[in-house]
Image (cartoon, rainbow, N blue to C red; front, side):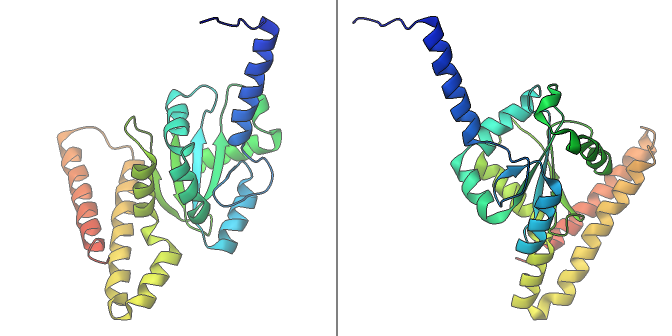
Length: 231
């Protein structure tokens, strides 16, 4: 078998073409927003979320240096199963903190920092799920070596179960369970807030506080079990 050796210049051109093609396939919008497509335009995404009654997935990432971010991009977000699901179910927002400053438009940098502080993001990637109002936090997800489109979709579905749209739909379909369902939601949110407020006090790591933490977690687990009864 005869091998054809391409000139280095041609190899470079072809490599550039393939790279551009790959980038174009998963291009992140810098202006405007479309359901299921990543955008840096948080304002446009929140406006569209309110119009379409869709939750938002905020992706706090370091796109050009964070290995876990790249892993999730390749193994979850680049897959067709995820893209198909996202197109009908969520607004996707990229909040990037890259080494290459040219990746993010200057007008978004201060806003990205503000959102990072607002949602207490301490590492990358961090995925914050907001309700369609663009304010209410429904959940927080992270990366994982074993994450797949299907597993991430299930995590996302669990987080948005208590979105305003889903709660309204459940109550409409089950009016006899409305009061109990609302009470279970309130207890779940109160339990989560109690733990968050306690952690915000930066408690010392000792036996007494370990027991307190276990108590908070037990309350959260009990609240989640109660919510699980409303399927």
